[in-house]
Each structure stands twice: as C-alpha cells, then as structure tokens.
Image 1 (cartoon, rainbow, N blue to C red):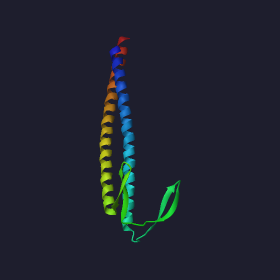
Image 2: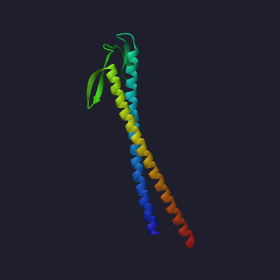
Image 3: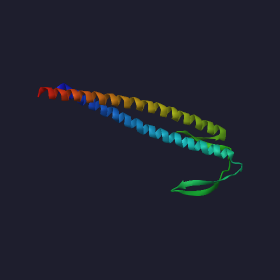
Image 4: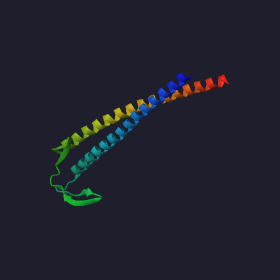
Length: 147
C-alpha cells in the first residue's frame, strides 16, 4: 500500500515537472509566433512600398499612443534593417525582403520544433496521467477486496 502511495507521489511530481516544461514551451511558442508575425508585417510593408509609383511617397509615422506624424520617404529603394544585438544595416528593398524571408523561415523552423516538443510533452503527460489512474484503480480495488 505504501509502495503504491510512493509511486503516485513520484508520478505526481513527474507530472508537475513536465507540466512546467510544457508551460515554458507554450510561452516560448507564443513569443516565437509574435516575432515571426512582426517580421512578416515588415516584409509585407516593404513589398507594398516596392509597388508605390511615387518617388517620395507620403506616410504616417507612428509615435505612440495611437498618434502619428506625417512624413515623406526620402529613399524608397533602401531600408535599414535590424540584424540583431542593436545593430542595423542599410539594404536594398529586395535584399531587405530576402533577409526578412530568411528570418521568417528561421522563426517558422523554431516554431515547428517547439510545437513538436510540446506535442511530445503532452503525450508524456497523458501517459503519466494514465499510469496514475491505473495505480489509483488498483489501490481502490485493494481496499474493496479487504473489506
């Protein structure tokens, strides 16, 4: 009887650990998705800019709190793109779009790996729950037989 209780406690502990890991992966997945979506939005904006015929198109520049300033794009053929660690470089629109596509692909690969890890953890959680249920049933049957 004590052995079954120890097994149940061990399973509960393992379940909690896996659940915490799954929660971290889910949070990571959310951050990866937000990052990918941000890169996708920038890429779409640059693709739209390529289609604009005006050489100095007017734009609205967001300054926060839903407020904007009117502006003019001085050079619509180049963009300054963040390359990480606080650095940014100027690229042609085509190069910037290609760079963004590569980053989006990196995010999508990371998202796929994270989703797979989450699926594996969820399967392990299901197995642990099933084992715990079987132990509880055996324990309950042991009590009912002794009456």
